[in-house]
Image (cartoon, rainbow, N blue to C red; front, side, top):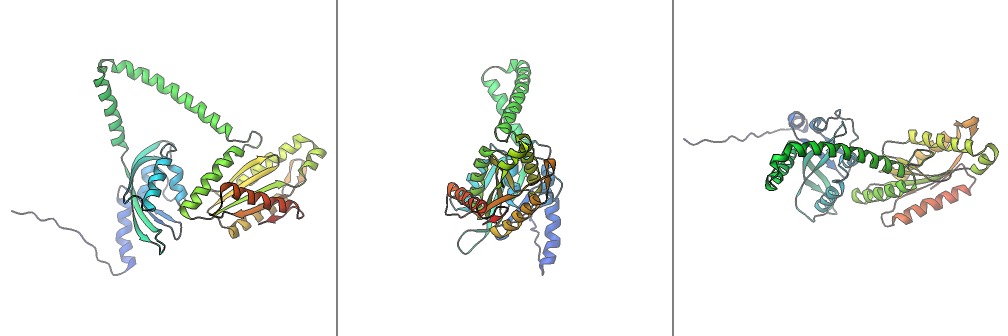
Length: 344
């Protein structure tokens, strides 16, 4: 007797009826699905995506930064290279295995598959959908199997217990070393006085954000600012008070920034602000709020200060050095235009 397979199909008359079928399916399937629209910049993710990684459903912003920020640093360059090769048409398939950061800080192996479903008139990507599948158990099994096979091939299976003991000792030593390396790296990227990012960290961050702006065709704004007549503050109140003002100002700005914005101390009383995915018009409003906040805040010993700001938006035709130079020139104009002002 022949057996026949029945294919289930759905026929809907309206988008609302389709959503009633699709949304419950997306909620119960095990894979973490995603849907990226370049027109809006939004990335929609189903509840299973959050549950797979242990996060509260909907806790992240709906943007590509959420995805990039959870990729393991060692896997990041490889993933970006593969992603860009696919969306630029250099390869016809997007499928790659890598590690994603979970809510508890550990990493989960996933396989990421995606497909472009819509194109813009200029041939660029308009929409892409895909899914993240949990393959952690398989990767761990493969790793364990490779280790055991290596022991057998080398004739060391009988020493397994001794090796495990030594491996534990080595693991603990490596963990301690990794913590020390991370601390050294953190210190090397942090300004010793204000505890915000330092010049080296900013130089790395601006290169990364420029590449993102090019990749996703997102706007990117950069502001430079410094404290007006800060030398007079140091001369009148002393450098200790001046240092306290720098610390308080850095903390005030850092707490007032949006989640993807960043502040760094460039040197002395001069600072930089990076505003990813932010146009010049929106950035003007953000910087004006900061300028007024500083003006109306009393710092150490009830001292009032003001700051001058230079603000620009990234031009995709310019280099990182040219981008920064324009911001520096804008700040120079602000300092020579009466101070406590914003030039853009």
